[in-house]
Length: 267
Image: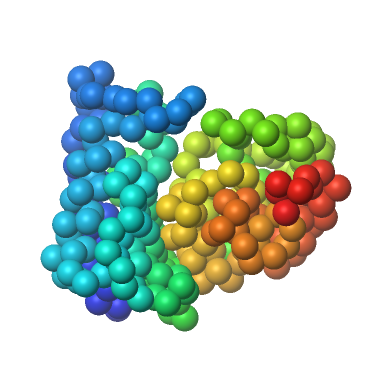
């Protein structure tokens, strides 16, 4: 097991506590209180309880740090900002589909420095520290080495609340169906990026994501040797929520396929 940065150790503790809470609740999903935030966008009492567990654990160790969390928003001001998605893949969780995760990232002065993605159903703990690499449990991660799109599996996520760019997305999807070895849409962007870092995917793209969906995963991919950009090849992915990831060979090929379908909103 790699020697963890102290702040990453705290994040791992928070993620495991939240993951245990989520896992215990997975057997009684039909008894949970669930609210609808928007079309196909749900929040359960488990999301909120997991988020509070994470925040409490982080602030016990670092009371002066700031928080940006999916359900409770922003709190505090600091050069250290924890970015939290307590349950990425809530729709999967509520339907008994075992594909969801806890995602925690730390920004220091706007730069991602620590990341944890914890899958409680498989007990897979993905971690990354800037400059120290990415790991799955005690195994060092590297992105895949595939060279050609025709041999590559590409992860994605369908638009589910904002359908403004649906036609552009479907055009990209259609072209990739013909030019890749396969497309996958499991339903958790955090895990998709962790899987990209682990070499399970060769590339990944999605539109309209939130900062807490992708912050931890972005550091995971870059520390595993991969490339991250927005769909226009720029570095505004945390700002726009439009993301393209891949190894050094597949990333530019994926961008080239996406480029003809870009709209102004996707740049």
